[in-house]
Length: 184
Image (cartoon, rainbow, N blue to C red; front, side, top):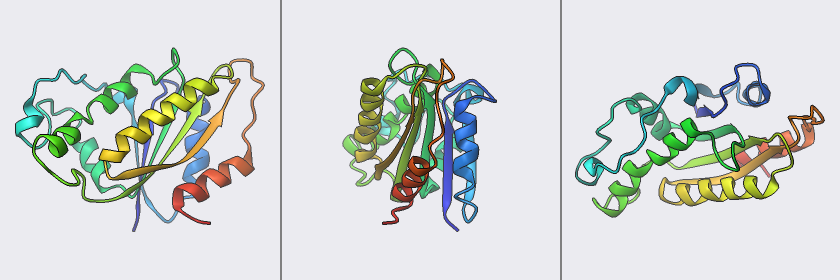
C-alpha cells in the first residue's frame, strides 16, 4: 500500500487548509495516510549544531517519528497559508530541519540521503493575490526536494481567502491530484 503524508502549516483547525486536506484525502482512499499539524508538533528550530554532519538524524529528537513517516512516504503534500510572503514559522522550522539530509548528502556522502523516491505537492492559500510569494514558496520546496529524492510535481493555489471571494476549483484540484499521482 502506498503512503501519503499530509503536512499542515496552518494554525486553524477549521480553515481553508483543513478543508483542502479533507478534499485531497478523498482521492487517496487506497493509501495509508498520516497527517501532521506543524503547530501541534511545535518543532524546535535548527540551530546548526553540526550533529547531523557526523551522525544520522538530529540532536533534537522532537521530529524523529515525523521523519520516519517522511522517509517512508510515497506522496507528500504540504498545505499552507502565506504568512508575510512565506511559510508560517512552524512549517519553516520543519523545512529547516531538512538540514539532517543535506548534511547526510554533502558531509557524509549518502547518495541519496533518503532511499525512497517521493512525489510532492504543495497546496497554498493566501488572503490576497500573492502569486509571486506562492511561486517563491514552491521554488523553495523544489530546491529542497532535489536533495531529498523527491519531485515537487503539483501545486494548487487558492487566493483571496481574506475577502471570502475564493472558490475551490474542482478542475484544478483534480489536475493537482493527477499531477501528484503521475497520471497523464
